[in-house]
Image (tube, rainbow, N blue to C red; front, side, top):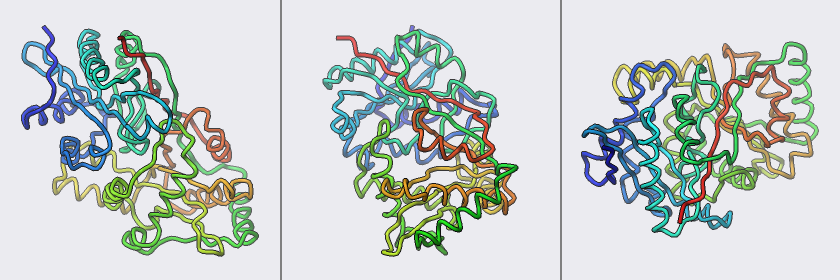
Length: 374
């Protein structure tokens, strides 16, 4: 018999966080989140919990945990998009449609009590978190920023009545064989023509003090019309800055400023730390720190987190400047490739950027939706 229990006690919180580590034990593609940080979602003072309603549930069969799910009512996103949606995230389950159905039925009940009309996910608190169900690319390396899942998850969702709402694509990028030098030269000329300055900070503290709020301003402006986005308050931004400071090196944030010292574009990358996190199961141990620091110092793969350009500069060729800078990085470094994170399949501005690289689509993720039964 399957029982669903809402997570309330410390013991239940530990079971919720531990379950995917058990489910994916020995899987070469799964990359866990940082173990300690996962407990933040249970803290009432966690910045997102001040602007969201949330609940977590465990599925038990014969006394053993066999599934989990978190529901999030992102009030600001619902207000922005005129929706009454509950997001689901941290969904993990054994290959059993009855277990998945029991979890979703309990989440629907909670959502209905809150006056919601639709389930959608996997989606986190914001679009800067892990989102989307992997539906293609199960044998591909995963970035730390995104979630791996078993192929049967799609069957579990569709059996319950979920259908596609949106897809994201992911790519591996390498420098083009024929036009690389030309793209770099075009980038340099455009920098001079528009009077733009290429800026790279000397330290993470300089980024935080002088640049990071310019990055978030561009994110808010350039990404505001994309699927699932919502405004971020200062406390939430500060929380993201804390995580940013752990992973990113100063040279991984490339910024363009105009003559008025306004940031007009940026590219944010992350050294791939997936293997280090895998080997430690997300725990920060001495061995993890050693490998983590090695991977940060000499990465072979960089995760391309975000590229942002102010809308008024897109038509001026600034996008070509960013392309040239990234191509130059691939030419002059020891990197094997850039691994993109999620790109909406209808985000044609970003897809047009990628056509200048030697690219290979290697993953697809999907967000699903379902009307809540009354």
